[in-house]
Image (cartoon, rainbow, N blue to C red; front, side):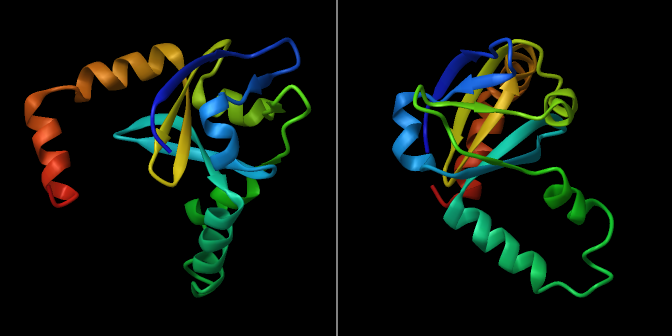
Length: 142
């Protein structure tokens, strides 16, 4: 998934799925806690990516499943967009990410992140430097 898309929560805490992401996210996807460079956001996983995450979690020892790792699953929401391609987010998830009304949905390879628009602007300003971009390109082998 790629790109960034501005959106707004409606009165029922629903978001509209951007048309470019509809096919990639699929008819059912999962949203849970996320973090990027110390900023809170939400992460949306396709059903296939969620299954991989679940399989990895289930392969952990019981002691490794405790704490923060289990928070990813216990706070997740299964999302099925309606006919207008809207999906609801829980009050807990919205509060965690500090999402009030204005939202940025950004593609991140096999996932999408859902951000409060102001928090995303801060994240982007902090990370949109030549040094950080170069480090990112080197990290992915470019």
